Length: 298
Image (cartoon, rainbow, N blue to C red; front, side, top):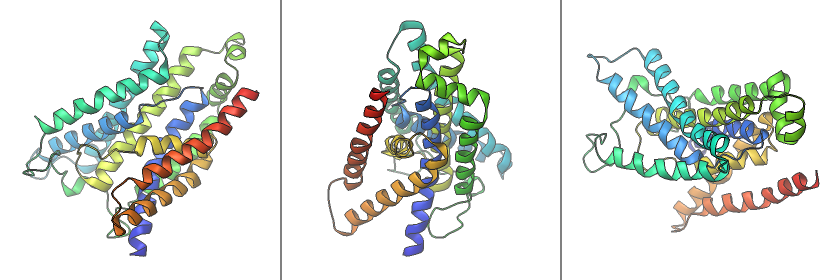
């Protein structure tokens, strides 16, 4: 039981690390991407559909490396396009990025729900979900019977890479400067379009990858609601980490532990309300005020 719970925590933290790193980069630019839920859902859906199609090609399907690579790229691209809609509306029409990212996410969720319930519904009888992806496209569990897979280490590498990008590259430092002092950044000649499009695209892409990783490592199909809470928790992870990609690793482990413990407590004690959602709301509430105060003071 302990090993199973540990595996669940580590597997969930890997998803938080992935999406949390993207949110950190986006927040560093001064943009709040509230569309994480829809982007994760869209990425997972595209991944499931593509892998299902590859699995039906020939007697043994396409080679695993090729199929998984294409699925990850497709998930990243579709989620990037979703977030870039909001960025484009902000630049061309002056729309509020925070608001439009949430609206686009709210619009894409029922659309994907309809696709899963309609043309992409699997052969699982009454189960509203896509077909199961074949076993060769699934991540191998390294701590059975939990869903912990080697992707956990990939997620750690993504966090470290995000930290080096932000603090060790010229463009990463430009993103930080723009997020801290927009007028100064523009006065010094930094490209606003390059910074905004790149930072928001990174957020969308990593959200999509997190959705694909959830499909390949945990659920093995895409169903309505699998993304629930994941996007908001990833945003909370970035805020707990104080927008430092290196700190996304411990903050993801912390929040994954709280979420898993709350869910298991509710299950074993027969609670009919979402304890993990309550904990998530309290954490965001407590963290948001120091960030706002610090930003206002500057």
